[in-house]
Every structure is written in C-alpha cells, then in structure tokens.
Length: 147
Image 1 (cartoon, rainbow, N blue to C red):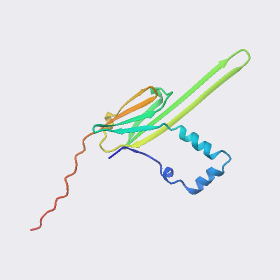
Image 2 (cartoon, one colour):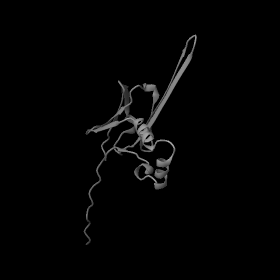
Image 3 (cartoon, rainbow, N blue to C red):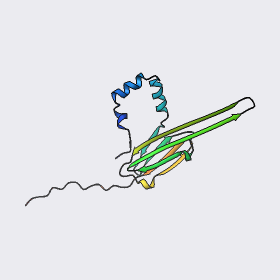
Image 4 (cartoon, rainbow, N blue to C red):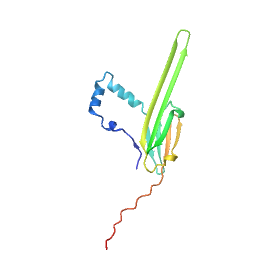
C-alpha cells in the first residue's frame, strides 16, 4: 500500500454551477487560481523497504510555524506565518505585514508506525520520515475437502 494525497471530492469533480460562477465573478478567475495553487508547497514522496520520506518545500518558515498531526489514519501538515514591520521617520510611517498559511493531508498506509514519525526542518525543506512496520500477510485461502 502506498501513501496517498487526500483530495476533497470537489477537487476531483467540481460542481458545474460553482465552476461557472467562478468564471463570471468580477475578479479574475485565472489569476486567483494561479495564486491559490502557488501557496500550496510541493511535496516529494519517496518509499523504501523500511520507510516513507516526505520533503515539503516551505522556504522562509521556521520550525515553530509548522503543525504536524496524525489523526484517524491521516497525516496533517500545516503552517502559519505572520510578519509585521513598521518604520517611523520624521515625515512618514510605513507599516507592512504579511500572512501565509497552507495545509496538506495524506492518508497513512496501514504499515506506517504513526507514533514513530520524525520531522526536521532545515534550509527551507520540512523532512518527514515515516517508518514502516511489517504487516503479516494473510494466509491464502485453503480449500477444505468434504468427506
């Protein structure tokens, strides 16, 4: 079994009226779609015999910005970053702020040891190691002879 990225049903088959509404709204449909997709970080998934490895590209974050949670067979990865900057001078005041957030979720295969997942954030990449546990294969069906 492999690690699967969770998608909501609306991502797989958008509702027709909702899609039409998005195109004909006052804002620019294509620009908003591009911006929304740019805020979700790319994730690389690698599988070996002993573990799964996830690499989440999230530059500019700190490890304190992330929240990792395993609940009901799902791995939830989210981050939130707020920045405020204020400059005061004799003739002006300039205040800037930014806010960024994302969330990704993945179904965990039954062979992942959820309580042993490790995470390290270094150089803009959140690295997760999901160790595997050996799952006993079920015995094949056996025919019983009737006497």
